[in-house]
Amino acid sequence: MRLAIPHSLDREEARRRLREKAAQAAAKADGMAEVTTTFADDDHLVMTVSAMGYTLDCGVELAEKELIVEVDIPASLGFAKRMIEGMIREKSGKLLN
Image 1 (cartoon, helix red, strand yellow):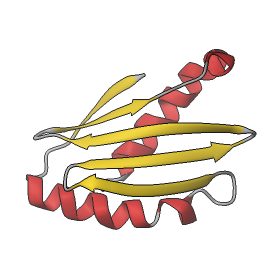
Image 2 (cartoon, rainbow, N blue to C red):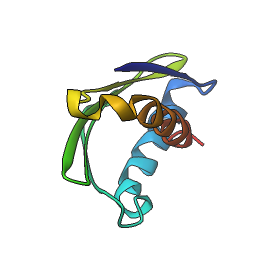
Image 3 (cartoon, rainbow, N blue to C red):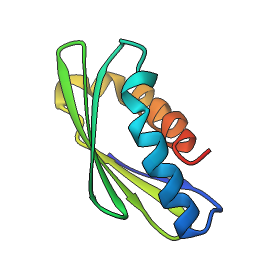
């Protein structure tokens, strides 16, 4: 799944916020999931989210006016695709707030 989340920040401010919020991601999962984050470079965040026996690999790219989120969703979670998309949109938008 590939989603674009718009933002209106300049690149440096967006990078700063992304790094700050990514460091807090595990704590914000509230014990519902295990989250690990790593930056491949200044504009690419790699996340792994493990919950309920599933592990999802996610990539977040910081583009000029949007965050591009890519998530590999296994076929066995196809029934929850809309719910997962909604959560991604909500949580990804908060990465830059």
